[in-house]
Image (cartoon, rainbow, N blue to C red):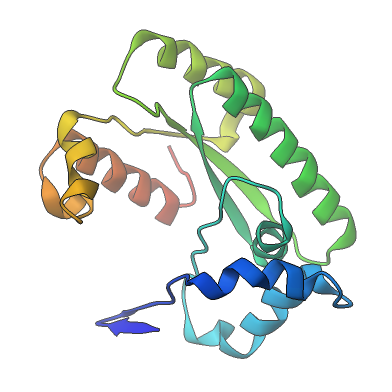
Length: 179
């Protein structure tokens, strides 16, 4: 656990590699993370969980524990199909959970801004309506350079287009997606 100012960060480690196997025999395994969060929920305004792009047991745990789900979607055919699969999984979790979870998506071009992303964003809005954030992440060459330097784009180029895109998305998230 890294404690810095008003944020705590629990980083993943290699120990998670065996967690899915260890949890596979547990009763109520899909609620393990939710149960682990119960004693600390009042200590935090937000708990953000980053998951891998799979629907394994660790991701199912995160989705079950979540009140809200925010999904970055690349403007590509397979990403769109994956989003439909995720929506089906969220519906299944909702049927077995007492917690109501809402999901929202945002358009992430995945590469540098190009015309096919415009059509992809339109497809998202047609299929998911007001569950699509208005904010779109615009990537630049500087965006791609940031991780190489070990920095977020917010630190690497704080006044750049990509950093502004992420700030706009953060503001939209904090205002519950009010456009």
